[in-house]
Structures are given as C-alpha cells and as structure tokens.
Image 1 (cartoon, rainbow, N blue to C red):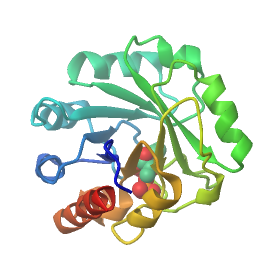
Image 2 (image 1 turned 90 degrees about the vertical axis):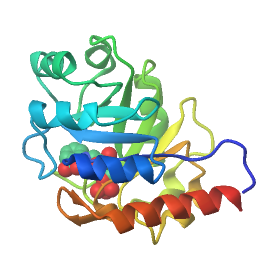
Image 3 (image 1 turned 135 degrees about the vertical axis):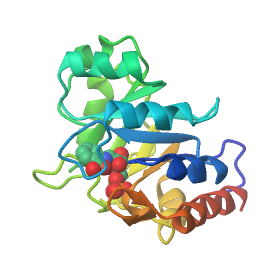
Image 4 (image 1 turned 180 degrees about the vertical axis):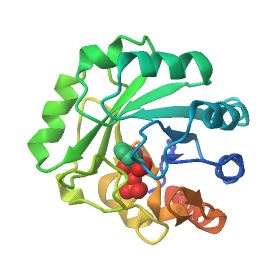
Length: 212
Ligand SMILES: O=C(O)c1ccccc1NCC(=O)[C@H](O)[C@H](O)COP(=O)(O)O
C-alpha cells in the first residue's frame, strides 16, 4: 500500500480501564464508550468517567449513543471527558449538531446509494461510519457487510465497521481503503470484555498492511 496516511483505529465497547490501557498501548487512536443500556457493553456515567480519565492526550474518547434523550447526552458531556460523539441510531443532522461537539454518524449499509445519501444528509458529521445492517439490532453485531458497497470516493472520510477481526482486517483495508476502522466484538474475550491478545493482533495487522 505504501501510504503516508495510516489507517486510524478505534476500539469500541470498552468497559474496563485495563482494556482501555491495552488499546492505547497497542496503538489505538480512539476508544469508544457505549451509552446505550440494552447493550452488554453499556457503561454508567461513573464507569465512563473513570475510563476516560485514564486515557492519555491525543487518544480520542468517543461516546456512542443510539437515539438518546437530549438531556442524557448533555449529562454525559458534563461529567465525562468526551472528545467525539458517535450517533448510531436514527438521529438527524440537527439533533447531532445541537451539542456543539464533533460527531460522526453511523449508517447501517444495505445498498450503495444509502452511503452517498447519508453523506449528504449529515453535512456536519466529521465522518460516516459504515456498519452491518441487521434488522432490529442498531450495532455491535459482529457481522460484516458487503464491502463492495463501500464507495471509492465520498465527500466524507469513511470509518469501516462491522465484524472486523485480526483475521479479516488486512483484506478490509486492501478492499476498501477506509480512513479508519472501528472494531468491538472481534477483539473481545466475551461480550464487553476485551481480549488483550486480539487487540494487539488487530493493531499489528493494521500496522503491517499500512507498511506493505
Ligand atoms: O456495541 C454495541 O453493543 C452497540 C450497541 C448498539 C449500537 C452500537 C453498538 N456498537 C457499535 C460498535 O461497537 C461499532 O461501532 C461497530 O458496530 C462494530 O461492532 P462489531 O461488529 O462488534 O465490531
């Protein structure tokens, strides 16, 4: 690939300080905290505040919400060090903008035209995160989608998500050349508990593809 710009990596669904530490030490650019109670990766505000406080400067702490109440987002932003918001539900651009905080918007991909349309519908998003579509499940499915639906060119940077793991991340980068990758289930020992070996293997794969 021989590129100067390397592929950024976010490890999502962190629930423990020790997992955040492994992610950072392995070279992750960002961690994700899930503020969505039905998720097995959901964190309380107190848990999140402690994890975020343990993350060093220059590593992005991301707060993930799914169709949240405005007041809940505000509460989280007041109490937790959050650098970036990830909206993972049916929020519109105006809703996402009201917090005056940089945000990314997740899209569950069904067809290529969805991707282009969503980029237009979210002019203020810093990037569009493409995730697998599974009826009734907003995210964190552990499933991949058809990467041929990822457009070569989009106005906004693309973050590829959905079913990524050490075993397939090299192909994912080669086939889609995303700005960044987002992984959760593929680096877990069990739901909500990360596996240090898998995190290291994932980041090591990314490093090697970027250097080749
Ligand atoms: O992680 C969850 O449980 C979750 C629940 C609801 C919405 C989003 C959720 N997670 C999002 C992510 O962790 C990632 O952005 C992405 O979906 C990748 O997940 P995975 O397929 O497990 O790698």
